[in-house]
Image 1 (spheres, rainbow, N blue to C red):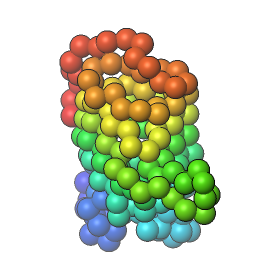
Image 2: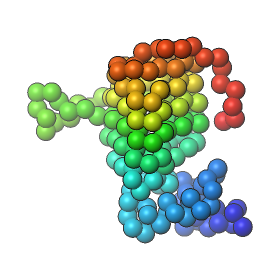
Image 3: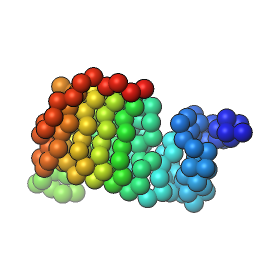
Image 4: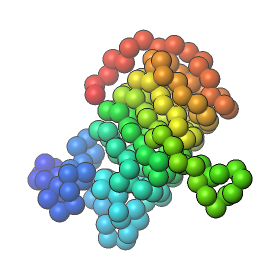
Length: 174
């Protein structure tokens, strides 16, 4: 039954709604808010109705569903590239474009945010423009990431974020 439901969602809403790894009840609930009521209607993958995703066409979502956790703000105007198996906690903000400090009506274009494979962005963390995170980087809850951390296999925390612990290689499934 579950695989039939997923196949129907895939056929109607596109490959982003196949829902691999999602409970069917969650897929139905999110789809109702997104496709029927119109919350994040233009996003081609499941997104929680309290989250906001802007410019999804410039977001490579990887293998998971950015914005499926509640209260996320994901701004893809400069682009965001998620690696495989990136987990995003509730109320995470990923802001790819900043205002010009000399003219608030204009924005600064630049490089996309790149988040490596097997990263975990903890609750209430903020990723700012032009940041790149190496593979298996854990961003602690409440951290504000203002610059890149390319090395990977680490936990970063604080405001602004800094490395607080080195980790071994990721052992989980991708």
